[in-house]
Image 1 (cartoon, one colour):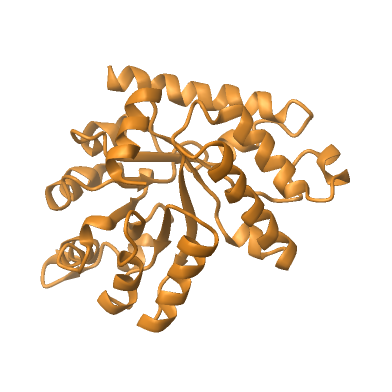
Image 2: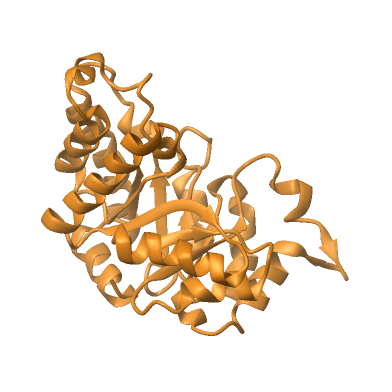
Length: 270
């Protein structure tokens, strides 16, 4: 999927919502456990109930890998279902990969070719040769960790080297990498005050923004400085939507929560 196609969906749906599919068998409704693949059944119900309100889904792969081969199969079935029935949806493998070049090439092939994701999150710590293998795939997107929403982000990301914060150096350096037009960036909603500075460095890039809702980030704060002419934001909400209910009405309640965020986004876009 190209960024132009993504922007078209954002304007069509009046939404830049991304829903995180972080499935925990201890949190999903108990009645789903009777199914052969409860993870997929949960995801399918959430997707069917919310696809008109969002433009992206983001499974965090750790929640699938934790269940071994069965979890990986559930992830594959989920992405196959999205690609078959809702191909207009942008898919994000939240895998946070990144390694030496030949290893990164294998990671990229796994997520882009085998699983069929549109994008994957990648850690920048090992530098250019660990990221460029992901960028080599046409119409696929590498979402680089820039300024994350967790408390430990301050351990390194905001530290100054030669008077410039590390996250700013990551942003600036990455622009020179081959096929950098395929880059997007993770910027946490809990760091909303940084968006103005980030937009000075990457004014046209899409930003994946976790941390709205359960982690305390506010949509209005992010949009004040994060929006660009393409909208340029994918606001992720996971727990606040998918675990809105632990009963049989879980998909209906997830839809209502997604609608709340979509309605806020529509007002902002109008």
